[in-house]
Every structure is written in structure tokens, then in C-alpha cells.
Length: 307
Image (cartoon, rainbow, N blue to C red):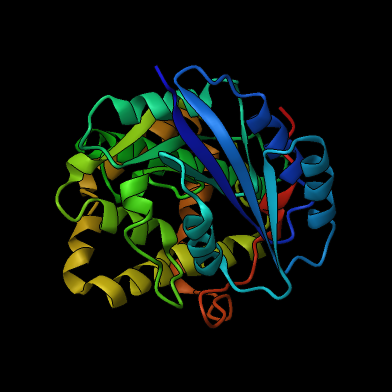
């Protein structure tokens, strides 16, 4: 039987510290129920060595294709380009600052898609790597608290579950739409589009293990908070109307239960994460969002992840 084809698309802006580790982890994936047809890396106006690193990989591995944007255009524009030039049965987009832990991560996502023909979008599950700084430890616990909560909410089928750094789509989905100019919350826009006819169209591949590095400095926490707490919701409301916000509702009982769970496990860092989340809400960093869907980067989360 002919295997289903998969293209991997990677938007990259100044990702020299991790892009090589990501590409290496993709190339090592076991292709059991699919065939990896192409890896497309879009260099979004990089000013570091990202383009050179990708070029070196592409010379060794012909399935890697590189597209160069001279000037930065933003993630939404880059994703639209990837959607346009992809023709595989499935398209899997990865953020450039993550790494696949094992050789079966893509296989697990593909298998999740194949369980139900109604599923057109599958999200990967992220594992935060250990942090050394105090702020980094706070951010890891903050991530684990919200993950614990969204896994309980509708069995993990909700907006929060699509973190955005790993999204597998059927061709019928990724060829059906384009991100509007100025889109900031690409993962929320994607989720809303995929599930417009019901949540049955999304699944979280809970058994995947995809490494992600959370922020580790106070300034980066404020930058990330300005986007994820304020701008993401504002962006999705602009495109889908205020009624879409009801889908962001996290029952207090679920969230408080998750906080209590992690407070018992790690009281100091849980209190620290709560304090930091209060700070970014009370004193938002208003300069983080740039025009036309581009934002100031949180650089501390871009350090290379070595498996």
C-alpha cells in the first residue's frame, strides 16, 4: 500500500542556536505509516547564521528545500508561503526552537490523524526542558500548570492544547485558507478554522514528546505575556468576533485544582509562577507587539535544545 506523504514546514527567524538540532531530530524520524516527502525551511529575513546552517543541511539532504525572504515578513506570511508550496497529503509545521525527543514523534501524530477521518488537525504535546535560572524554573511550572488544566478540559480538545509549535494538517485544511495580514495568534486562528464545524476535527497527540524551552528572564516573560495574554485574544476576536472568546473559557475549578496539584509538588516555584503571571497582567509590556503580525522575540527561549 502506498504510504501517505508528509511535508514538514519550518518558519525561521534568527534560529541559529537550535535549527540544526531540530533538523537532525526530524531526519532521524521513523517513517512507518508515512513518507517524509520534503522539509521546507523559510528563512524570514534572518540576520544570523540560520540560512547558512540550513544550506549546509540541504546540500547533504536533498529533501530539504530553503526559501529565503530578504526582509522579515512575519510568521503568518511565512506559513502562507509554506501552505502554498506544499502538496503532500499532510503538512506538519514546526517552530524552529523545538526538538523532537524520540524517533517516533511524527509517527504518533500521523497515527492520531488516521484514527478518525473527521480529524483534520493534530497538535503535538510539549515537554519543557529543565531550566537553571529562577525565572526559568517559574516559567516551567507555569507551563506545567496550564498543561495539567487543559488536559482535563474536554479531554484535551480545546484551544489551549494547540500550543502552535507542532501542527499536523490534512491537505484539505491547509489548502483551504490563508492567514489574514497582521495575524498574531496563528495557532488560535488555525484551531478556529479547523474546528468551525465542531471540536471533533481536532485531536491532541498526547503521547508525543516534543522538547520546548520556556523563557528564563523577567524581560522575556513580560514580552511573551504581552502576546499570549493580551494580543492573542485581541487578534482572534478581530477575525472571528467576540463570541469566539467563550472558547477560551477555562473553568476555575479545573485551573485551581491544577495549581493545588503543583503547589503540593513544588510550593516555592508554584508561588513564583503565580506571582509572575500576576505581574504581567497588572503591568503589561505594551511595546512587545510590532505592526503587521511581527513581535519582539523572547530570546531566552531560543537556546539550543540538545537531546
